[in-house]
Image (cartoon, rainbow, N blue to C red):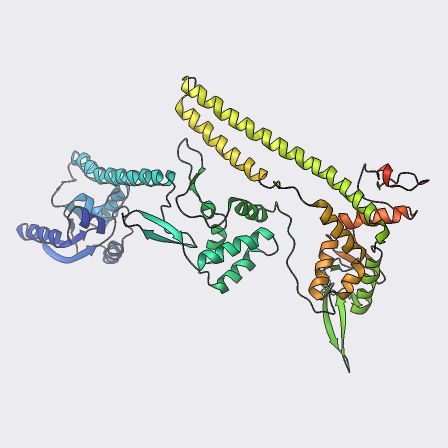
Length: 518
């Protein structure tokens, strides 16, 4: 008498849609074994898809059969071949494994004697039919989801900061979820400043209540869904593009673009903020004169008080008294003190420099507007060609998508130009007053204010050689003011601005135009 294992498989969706049940399969299989005098060794129940053989119960059964070399089983019975597999390639491979163990798989409602070569054609049909059905169902689902995406619907679990909801009419949608959405807005705002790394911001966000891993956070801040767009992935002849989503955006498109520029390194990074003690305001701004590392600072305890030093973190031995370094920096600032009698003259020169640079900005804006007009004209011509049958609708759709992508980029760049004029005169007047008293302002400021002054004046780190501070760059406004002040005092100085000469109307009688070239 032959011995058989009964394999009963059903997936949840099949049981719901087609009425398959484990009990009905078991009943049919047991009746078949009773009629054909087959002994039943074991019944295996599986609730898993048949796309692959990576199924929990099947893997357990197969491991047992391999261990016993199939000595205790002759047959594996199931109702139909689609209960065995819905993948023809995997099915043939598994049948070969079972054959080597001396076990024959058989479908009782679609019996085949595989010793007859012609029956292998019927086996191919039985195995291919359910695979085709699976593929057709998957393709229908794919196209349905793609159509929904084109309509602006989010077709997945809600992204971080949103929650899945269902309307009264059954339509599913996503909406902001508090407090995660507010925390995520804050994250985008901080990332746009380039003052902190994405990891630092993520850690703070976690402390505030954002439930998100680091990798998911890095993926989220790149997702255009947060400014109201849905990504349409590339498919066949369609390139990747964005569509307007039906959900509520968390941030503006401009803020999103600023964040992407910061993440891609296209935006100037302000550097990581460093806190320091009041006695060490220059900590983080100084470079070691020996090994060019950034100097740190610390306090050394004496008998009666603490003594503060700037020192290198390496073994080069560079070390300076904080008091000497701080006093030398105050002396350096005094060089930039401006005589208020020259206030109007400095304002006039700086305003002239600003107007020259602003003219370039206006030209850039005109160039962008011209490029936008060219793209709109291109789209208009493509539409006319399609209406006159000179190009196919598919070609027009491709041109339209390319044009929309180009227009979005150009309009984002155009939004960087201020629409309203800046009150330059008022701004320069305040700046001149600050520069005129920069030394006293620094001495009277608290530690945070001092560090703000240092950071705004010096884009590059400072070198201290034991006597004075040196740097390769300084704030352009302060540098120009310093040049004007010293030039009108009759001192010969140099500047970085190439091909630039002080206007003739600013020099006093008898003084030749002063070149600002190196």
